[in-house]
Image (cartoon, rainbow, N blue to C red; front, side):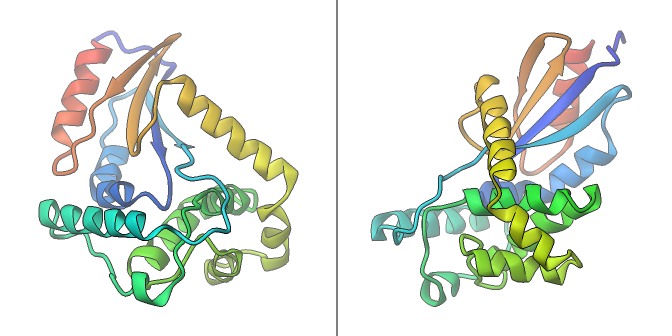
Length: 210
């Protein structure tokens, strides 16, 4: 099998995307079973720009229906529906995306820790990661320097880094999350996501790499 050494599998996601939460177990397996010569790189796709407006009732109903649909298809994926009563939902995921970048500035390991902290806060603990105070609290929980994180969260540099990641994902033609795209040399190949099993993803990768 002629595998190029510069193959990168991009995982395009948003920490407040419910299907990304559902994909988490298979993604973990994928990271452990990548073909030789392929590295996994995560890119933030940015689901919803900054907004202080309350989420319209219709969208709240749509998202709750999505959570229900995910639980039907993937019963092991848990959601805390108290979120919709206890929080004031906003259609705004860019702050959570910037939090992932701001966390990573204090060490690569904090990137993953922040993604998981945001997902657990949102889906399990009915907290709203659209709110900066929640994100700062999560930063403290995972052992980040709170002041440094707080400054980085809204800094122009962090905003620029997020814009670059969003532009990169869009240049690959990605419009919904989670998405997998394999880069080989100058070419990009969309890899279908399977929420139940890592094997079809690995088979597709082998086929494209061969």
